[in-house]
Image 1 (cartoon, rainbow, N blue to C red):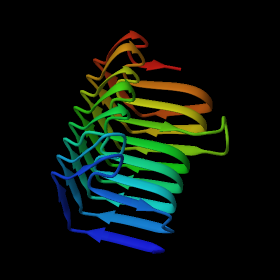
Image 2: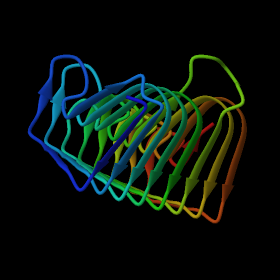
Image 3: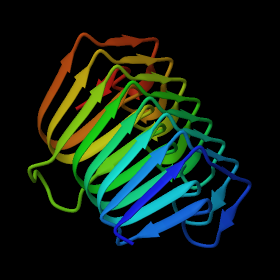
Length: 212
């Protein structure tokens, strides 16, 4: 299928042996999730709520990921990923508790909230990473809240191998990293811009606010 649209739907208490406890989508040109909830799903490896692989465009709008184990969303190889007006709450993963985004050329996250997510290794709320260093990859966080997320590295967010990161009008509050970068951990990135953002009561062994 070239285009998949899911609207006003629930994925509840599902499980997958490898990935995509709620939904597994591969080789689609465009995937649109609107007003969809992924709740209490699990997967042994990745993407307990949603697993999307090798697509061109993924958009998630007014959607809710809660208490998924795996992490909540896993995206593998997409040109453009946009997450708008969505909530990630109490999800758990190895890397990226709320979401793990791999090999996306452009990531835009607007007006979204990440609360009480946890990762066992990196990126309590989310991890964004790429196969190649410093490709033309742009990441935008605008009007987002990261609160009480936890991970050893990157309590709220872990971002690596990107060319440009923009953080605008965001709040990082009470995030925790047992090792480094309680608010945000950035590595192998050529440019980072933070404007009109608030970092409050984040705690980490190194880099209470950010590790760059």
